[in-house]
Length: 315
Image (cartoon, rainbow, N blue to C red; front, side, top):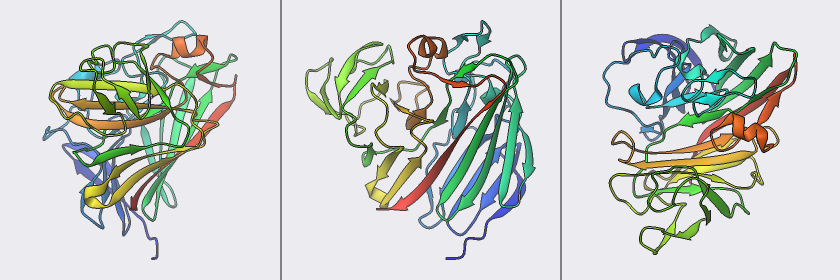
């Protein structure tokens, strides 16, 4: 197949949008809404991977907004942290980081698009170059530190994915233990509770549950857990057997060494979705991650680069 990609300016849900499209994939990005990817559509089977909220139009959040009050569909960038709280340099990180609620500058490239954002109070610039290649969207990131001191950070793709009873998570071999970080999880317990993976015992019922599945299917629950050890390989996947497709994330494990998983079955905003979150630091809190040696850092007056390739593959 000849891979011919197109770049198009359009409008999506009332906002300026960029469309990258080839024979296999259609990707829609909202530069003014945090550089959000609002759609990743597999054209070969007519399947949308990214969860879509019901909002007919979108409102751009102001800096420092409460994430829960705005649109949660699609793929938002989390940087330089996730939890609201102090950064190691003393400044306050807003809820879910800064960049999801900032407008990104946008310009076309020879084969895709480049987006960039500058922090209003931290000394960094974050850039991402995006292009399509076959059934894959390739995203290359570079974070530049303008200060004379190292800059600790956590980045993760907060990409909420559609799910149903067929959804299954795949991770590299040897990922055998997770830690709960969602205080309201009835099955996994509060922050810091460890479990074997994929099978463990529910703290609510005592029954065996498989964390790689979306079971038990019940209303009003939400879970988030992190694998306690770094990834043995740089990939993770979500399998949809009902449409014979696998969504695979590939990334350099030396740059993006950790993996978190989010699941909600109505326990957050009444939504039903799942997120695979490869990340540069753990437990959502960059202040904590830096203290325990599990944050990444941009060198003083230097840069930190990584990539994320997202592929819709046939089973």
